[in-house]
Image 1 (cartoon, rainbow over the protein chains, first blue to last red):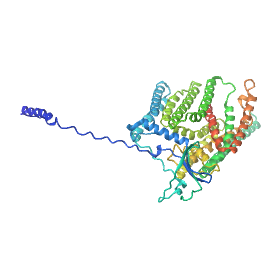
Image 2 (cartoon, chains in turn orange, cyan):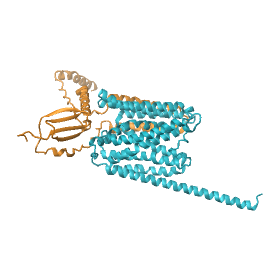
Image 3 (cartoon, rainbow over the protein chains, first blue to last red):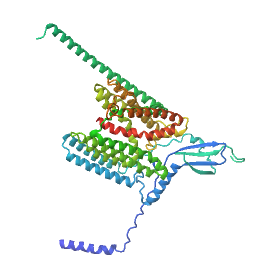
Length: 200
Length: 361
């Protein structure tokens, strides 16, 4: 009986490759391209002024130099990181920062251990042991709670009196000149006060 | 054997001295109560004005008190400097060299950023490096101070420093902001050490009064957590309000109301000014040792006949007083620019607090 069962099992094993040999492999599931979601926190914030000037002959948008620099650095970083970057990657922690932080935290543990080993004071040993325990517990807790957590979303910026510039039913449009200015963190849209004949 | 008349006289004298002791302890108690009442009044007034009109209060307090409080700190540090450095020579050399180097690099950062067009990443790296140097310098001073006594082993300072540097590199801008908010509290430690030396019977009242600070901060946060962002109410437009809100960390903590941040920062700064301008000088004056701020005869560097520099010290304090007047005039002429320059150069007094506080421990 046992011999028959073994023979049956062997026969099944021998037949299996023949039956499956020409079945095509399953199509690989297309890996979804991670959507690059721009979180509000990663976008620079600045103040916007819209002013009407009688001496202006054309509309002009003044972009602060420091914001342009920030945007340029952001674009360069995105180009360098490419499509392989994950959508959930923290865009506020660079590899260099992580490496240096890890090195110093390791050094801290090493020096704390040497101090505990060298010190003759019982109180100092107990304090160091408690500190090491708290350090390890906080690190473990931080891993557990924050490992893949999204950074908190910032509160919405207050648009202030810009809402009065237009209404949901109507949009404003025109041609502008764009210039970069030194005034930090203030965008300025200068609109000429005199309207040309026939334009509204 | 004593004569009966002398025995009576002795008892009378003993009774008089015990009643004098009673009078002095009740006087000390009254002094501690007055100190506590003044402290609580200052805390309450600071919290009220900071919460009600944070921008205006910031402008007024910086204008009035920034310069004078630096003068008082200089006077206090001169009083703590010994005429002969002795075993503390290396400690003070490291302290002064650190202050000079860190101040120079701190002032150079914006110039380098402008010259080399730094983006956000470069600023983050530079801030991380500067914060690391600061923490390691303080750790070295702590270790050197510990070595001045055979009973102390403060080599744990390096373990703590490396941990802080590691945390700093995870968020350098946030670490810098933390220093901005923690620095005003260092004055409270100075006051505690000074009370320990000159008014030890006031320390208990002082420690109880310290509980008012977190209570006031908690109250401000509770009331202002949903306050709208600050709108510039200054005649100079938005530039000054922008500087004040950025100094308080509005660009780093974008999820927190700028009204709340500026209020908290101004409140803590006002407490800092109050300690240096009121509390420390009054504690020194009333200790009976003639430590009035304008008297330099008590300074070791001025008093010592062979190693002292009385003339240099006198000229230094007069020049410092003149700088305070110049600062006031500069504020009146161009407040925003003067404010930027002041807070850059004032890093010197922030850095100098570290070694002098360690000297008092």
